[in-house]
Length: 300
Image (cartoon, rainbow, N blue to C red; front, side, top):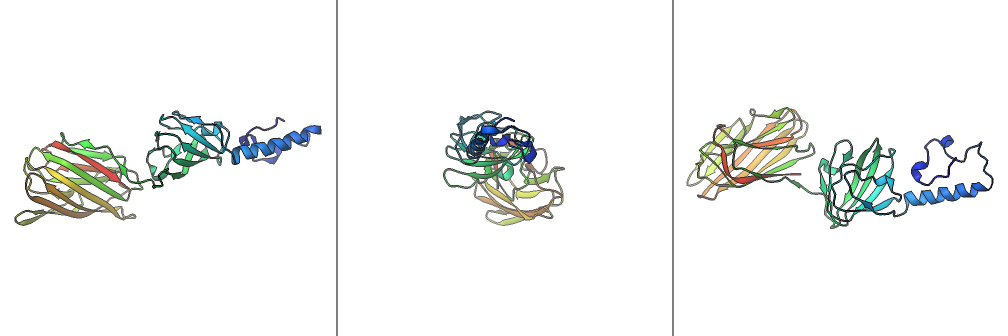
């Protein structure tokens, strides 16, 4: 039987390891004992060679329990090794760890952009699947809220944000300089894997100017009311998970018009049939289009 050189050469079945009862050991017993000591130390308590980042970065293919990962190439795969093998890595630069719900499971179910000095602990689940069981930022901060790329609200009757992970408990919609081509109200609608829901909202929006008017909506969270084509909107709308069993979300928001002294204050609730995974900002009539500004979403 060959003398092992890596911890992964060992079998979890004693009879499959060497030396075996039929082996002629002789003076080579010392070789086996020294090899076991070296391999155990190598893969459980030593720093191995640096590993260059690649789409498939085989972290278990290089000896050492702890390795530096160099380069900035995005990583989508960590190679294949038996389930239960652990690996600690330190990143030497900024790259993207790409979350996959099966093969590269990351905390929070979202991609991670690394920084020089960040440390991650990965556990193999076998068949090329890995789970990050711990991630530590070099600057001491925690993995925080995820900010989506801002979408230009310059065309179309709706702006959609999809792929929101099921762990999200709070979603902030941010509007900057948003306007539409007409007088339709603006609604925020939510949905799950079955699509965006357009009924069942319990919502109200109040317009504050020289007087106060309030309007209810059941087709979405009404977030502005009685606007004109010249209205330019800024502010935030916050969606918070109130009941995880009933998938009930509550909304509160405040938007101002920079073209005139008017505020829009909104609040409401809505229950889904499954975990929220999408948010839509749309015009109530379905004909007026967005024509200025941008919208982004933060989920946490």
